[in-house]
Length: 633
Image (cartoon, rainbow, N blue to C red; front, side):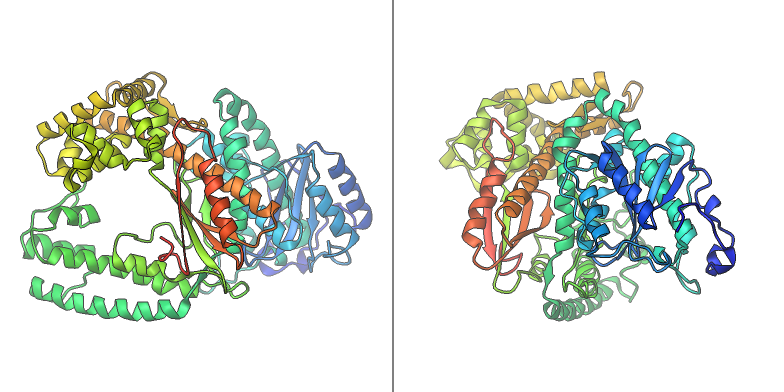
């Protein structure tokens, strides 16, 4: 088959009658090359083998990495030209890449060739798809999505490739929905496997070309903003780790969740009756409008409004402010928690089990949280309550593989250790080196009492101060959380800074940096930009200062655990272990430990987490084990 694009419109499925290869990406000046013959593929492989840098993209039957099929691979080695290689494509006629063939092996070697530099947009998805297909790339990959997020952490627009190509190159690229439809009631949705080959080639080639150009355009800005260390030492190495975690998934006990769902339902029904009795009438507890009417009009509770002071709210913080003012409030809070646990986890998780793997596969996001923390979606497995009994019972549903164990490794006070390192405060550092209870040590310093004489109440208050300082909390917030006057809070904070003077110096320096440079950064260089604060209100300035103080601490903590994940993942692969990292929740790693590997995993996990990043304060990881996630806490 020639690589010239020729179409017979009468042979296209109905959605494509108005779409030709020439209009598949009208704003992308990309010459598509179709590797769909022996001669064309041979030319492609030769070019790929000589390319110092290339960008690649995958076309699939869906967006679920764990279940979709690979349809094609596009590669750009020169600006303005993109190759498309169909993979077991029914519309490719006599030629497409077939598993196990000589061409397949040549493709695998070309994509993973050591020494070549390669780029992809949202590379995690492409790496996962290629690995499942038997075309693994175990080499570094430059991710244009993550690079753009580092450059524009406050970006409000999409980080999608087509949005970036439109902004930076003026391209108006075809959206995927234009090719395969939106689906939904009364509509037919196709997959890329149904798209005529020549149209798929033009579409995919433009994606690879856009990625190629975007990677080159980003380089100068990354250097100017000193973001290369963050990306090359932290973010890019983490991509294949997260791809493997998503492919591995987590095992759940579906029958247990079914029983828990029934129990939650019974408790919710009982709560409804109690809430109706307090309200004096039945109403939809899940309706914010009806709940607001009951709370503020029927029961006459103090009206809670949003920060703009105009809109009435029944949000969680609003109800917490009303706790103690009426018996109905804690009932509503409990009902909401149970409703979320039932709908989001007990009912939903069994339905999300992948029939091919028998496990649940979440998505980990690197380009969402400004501080660099990972987030989890579809489903969100980082937001299961750990304090409440019912939240912990949901965690019991996350189980080990047969004969194995669930291992949980949690950094101990990592953000306070990082604060001690950043501030270079000798008092804090020495307390950690003595392996003291840091909150008791702080209480002893604030109250000027021996460590052994610190009361539970004093420790609890010191804990609020410790974490409050790390999050930029002021006297007003401390007073509200500790049930004291603002003057008392000011005195306690002043006493704290007298004993931990280097912490105060660091806080003041961070505020100055925010106001002078309009940005702050983490230990590895992740920036958090700020507007010029001149002319801003006191509230806006205070909020900006809190964010500026928190960013280096929380952001560096995120970098520490990411580096630990990369090193641990490398050790697991190098050692040929069957145990796998399955979850990351803020300061915690969860592993599914294979039978016979528990003792080695305990040592290996602790070693890699505690030596991940050299700090002036020793990192400490607490490792626990159990048959399920809750028992491993």
